[in-house]
Amino acid sequence: MADQDEIARRSAQVMWADDAACKALDMRVLEVRPGYARMEMAVAQHMVNGHGMCHGGYIFTLADSAFAYACNSFGQRAVAQNCAITYVSPGRLGMRLVAEAQARLQQERSGIYDVTVRDEAGATIAEFRGHSRTLPGSLLDTPAKT
Image (cartoon, rainbow, N blue to C red; front, side, top):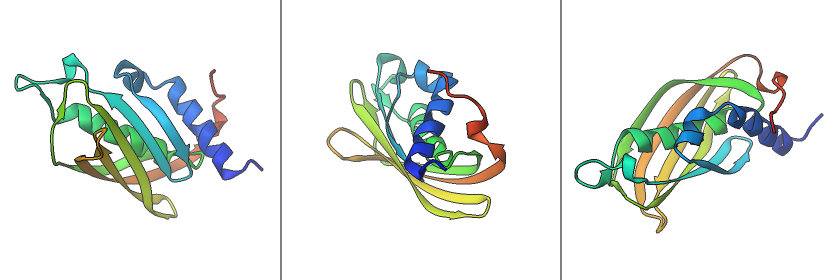
């Protein structure tokens, strides 16, 4: 039996192989381990509004992606049941944002995960909470593409 860190790494590889959204937004997976994921994204010109701020959908997508990688890190197929986000501060052009997702509860087929999005100075940009639901089958039944 593979150890849990190996399962988390392989799960992230399987997800990344078909993750067009993260690739299109130039996100990077920095770290994945069981119940945990850390991802980053730089705020690009196309992500800022008329006020020069990145606030809303792009930040949600980064937080939701970290949440997805954390919930799927056990090798099982998991999806979001619901998510809520509170925006604390906007991102700005050129900022490197890091989303850190951590399992708070994993019980039977349900999980609760908290995600904090911070800028490179460590200031909080957003707080996200997601509830996951594990589906039948294994994520690792799909061979990882390299």
